[in-house]
Amino acid sequence: MQFWNELEGRTIDGVYPLRRLVRSEGRHAWFETETGEPEAGPATISLTEAATDADEVLERLQAAQQLKHPNLVTITKVGQVRVDTTLVIYAVMEHIEQSLSDVLQSQALSPEEGREVAEALVSSLTAIHQQGMSHGRVEAASVLATEDTVKLRSDCLHTNPAGQADDVAAIGTTLFHAFTQRKALSATDAQINRIPAPFAEIIRNSFGRKWTLAQISNALKPVLPVASVIPQPAAAAPPPPAPPPVAVKAPVSTPPPPAYRPAAPEVPSRRTLRSDEDEEPVKQKPWLLYGGLGVVLLAIIGWLLLRPHSVQAPVETPTQATAPAPAPPAPAIATAKPPVARPPAAKPSPSAGASAARSDAATVPADGRTVWRVVAYTYRGQTKASDMVAKISGKHSDLDAEVFSPPGRGTVYLVTVGGAMDHDAAVKMRNKAQREGLPADSYVQNFSR
Image 1 (cartoon, rainbow, N blue to C red):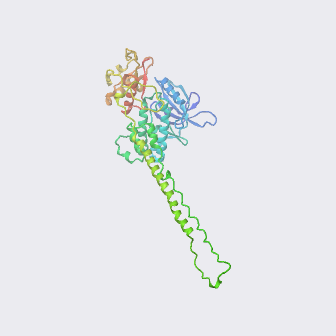
Image 2: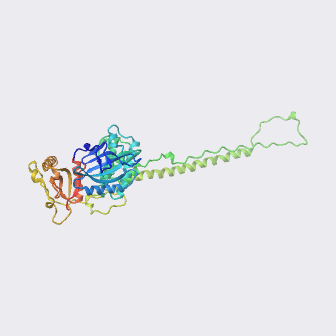
Image 3: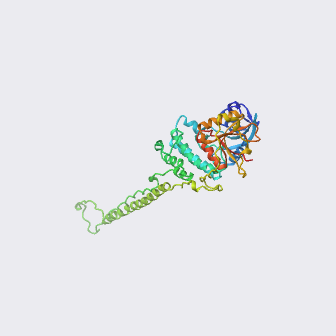
């Protein structure tokens, strides 16, 4: 397979022209393309080189195509085609403008932008986990912008729940990267303390595998100010106007002469004074009533705010691992099955390149159990594969790297780590190899048939 950028200008399946190379990562690449439909506009096409696992890649992309969610990139077409002599699986997706990793090269996110990213991650992962699937690549490069919406990459989903716990933990890593522009993160990193709330707490508990998606969602809910939930007392009504004083008429028969009636100031009647005194208790009663209601509401709000922080998801220990159960309808952290014990494989050396390739018949157990391997590199020549095994063994002797040649696959030589395993042990070995620096697109494959 030539370099990905050499495919610019080619056409996939006779329909989709490969325009600009957007991004490449190992055996995956994204190009700008067009759907050819009127008024459809630009699109993005994902290409995956599939030497030995074409059926698995095709199955995963078809499952992702059926999953529709506002925060997941929509896949409209899935197919396979040969480019020269290489089999390629393609997925046509909606147009992608940029990724979060592109933004973080120049600036960190604000709290408002970080909240939008966190809510999109929680919402999309909840939908994925509810279908019994896992994502496997939650990172800044997988957080994408399409028009005005933040969406999660969907062309890398897995059709099993084995990686759901890793998805939740990766939310903390991604948010730490978004606020600090640093990818490396440890549980005691002092820089977490400088990240605004509630993101510091989310990063600690998700990275430490203490919180579920539901708990992260609760932490992201906005807290209303206390003043906005306490009813304000109504303004006291002014006292009614005093009635006018009653005029006392003099007897008509003996009116005093006007010249002899001295003018005197009017005095409020007793009725007016009693009305003013009766109004005072009425004005005080609403204040006492509203004050009591305010105290009760404050107590309820305090209890609601403190309740989510007092509940922690139980941490499962290795002794609690059991056989895989059917996928739950709600998000759950899957417990990995202990790896099946196997004899240690001999470590290859640079001089043992010719003898390092093995056939599938030599590695299938006598009892017929399935055989899974972790594939890190694919070569057309045995010499290059042996050189890579020697390089890996020199730096990571614990990975048991070796050259593996599947029968019936021609001159394909695979560099695998960990030897023959069951599926769960292979997933663990792949994750370990990726943490130690092997390619991020290393994959597991069943070679028992």
